[in-house]
Image (cartoon, rainbow, N blue to C red; front, side, top):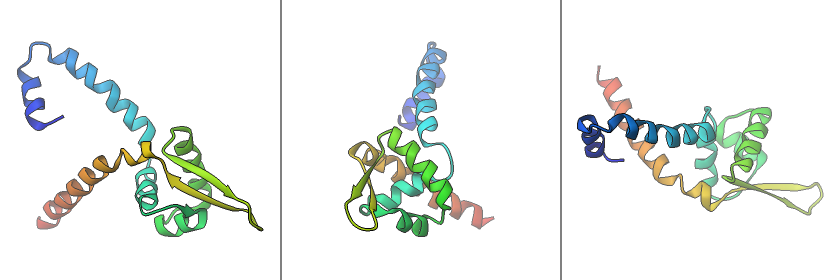
Length: 123
């Protein structure tokens, strides 16, 4: 939703209904993406499939937390887990097309983060 759309909501007599209608999908998105690690994991996998330990190293996360996050992300179809028949067994994780749909959001967050960092450091 654009800033102008939000400005129009302020003067809309049905703004409360629209706010409620907007709130549910936002809550759904936050439920799927909550926590500190999901978006960094998605960013990592954007650059190609990776093994578990590669993600641990790149993201800076513990094994236990990464395992939990990857299970959650698999359940929401953001990543896939592929076992490769080698000895020892190799497991790779990759972003799904549904996970790739977050690229616009991640780009917007990155831009906001850059602007925010500059604003805070200017003080």
